Image (spheres, rainbow, N blue to C red):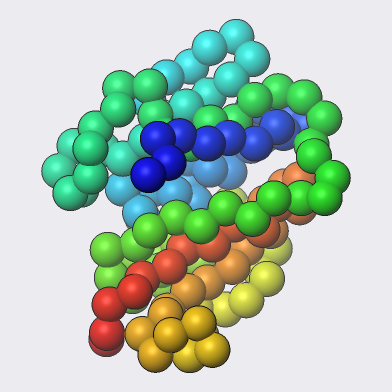
Length: 129
């Protein structure tokens, strides 16, 4: 469906460091670095197509208002938990601890963190526990 997306961030290096740490438990890593942008994508073997440029981009600039919400797919609930812990350790702010959100559907397990610019970043697993 969606091939790639991105957000503008106020400090590219700070955000690159945050997302490198926060997304590692989900199998994401930096795929491409340009002068004013960084592309993240899944590493080989995570069951998704492999784009050498990445499917999530950070671009240098003024952060958007209102802030976007970006949700990343997690392979299992443990990966959601690991994302949340890694994102907090990287300087993110808790915006919803890991847990079930049955108002979405019975197996919706997610965690939410605000990144350094205040974007709401989520990791979600749709499989039962």
